[in-house]
Image (cartoon, rainbow, N blue to C red; front, side, top):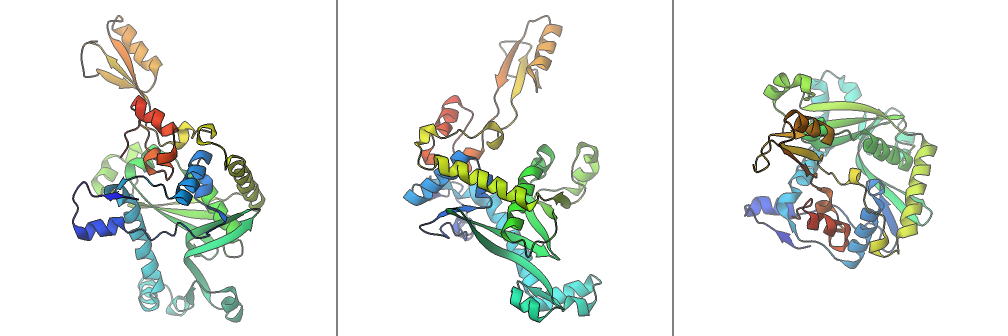
Length: 335
């Protein structure tokens, strides 16, 4: 992949954004799907596999990797804090946990270690688990497991938190992790730690009724899918991927609108048809039409189709003709 630095970031920052520690080729020569890959639309999953296999990659500007690198930095900071035995123990004591309990914590112990040391308290952090299913290898890296409870750290903007609900995706991802490691993830629920990168204490006070988060970090508890239901979900997805894996790109099922991170379509009402500035934006045509009738039908309504964003972050971007249609229609602006 060719990387651009169009904002001319300093070399110190440019290298931070350009370095990718993710292993994209963990199982060479084998059909492989990650837990997050199973949640992608079939077209995106297959074109991503083809792109990685052929080496075809789009040109990217490093500014697009800022959210990802910030998230990685947060994960790395949490991992560093927990893996330092001395500092972790001191922190727990300062948090009013008994020192004797704090010293029993062990990070990423093996099952044999635990069998020989029944008093240990296991904590797993940034651990990757694997499992074979049919012709595929499924894997996933968990953020944190303590006392059998899976925790996932999500760094996100406040706007995304207020606008959307990703609970279903979080539950599916967490359930796949438990399917991968049921002997370690033993509870039937997970905790999502949502860490806001742009939170404001003042806005929290002013916009509380509008759903603005009350704290910089919000925890959400979610029930996981039953083990058997999770396996059925995985098998169904793998069956669909295998069905289309060798199908020509033009015949692949298109990514559905709800998977495209598409902005909401608006209906712009112009009381003066010749004006370039809308009088008001409506979320439905019916609302805009009602306003038009109130103004004795002298204005005009123009549809503003929501912009598509996910295509710019798809590994199969250069192979996809669906995105070409969006670019041609103006609802996708490529990076």
